[in-house]
Image (tube, rainbow, N blue to C red):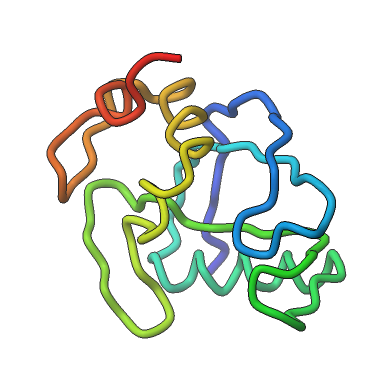
Length: 124
């Protein structure tokens, strides 16, 4: 059975400095909101397959990469498994993600912190 995934909205693309290993080129970042029939783990495997098809090689942590697809949220679910943690555990440490989330879903409530993206990001 084919399960559908649809893009509902997308943020603008912004350029950011690397996190962790800083002696590498800047990154381009964006956030999309989707509707999917895939379960969270199935979505993760689909994203990993896309990364692989686009040439992603996991050589070093925080190292250069051709693409990096993350699940920031999966609705209002909290998932804590070895290979999948949602909400994304680094979200609050990556202000650019909050900025982009605020752009496409300012009223979305973080399921653990009970605060909106607008409240978490604040103002520029």
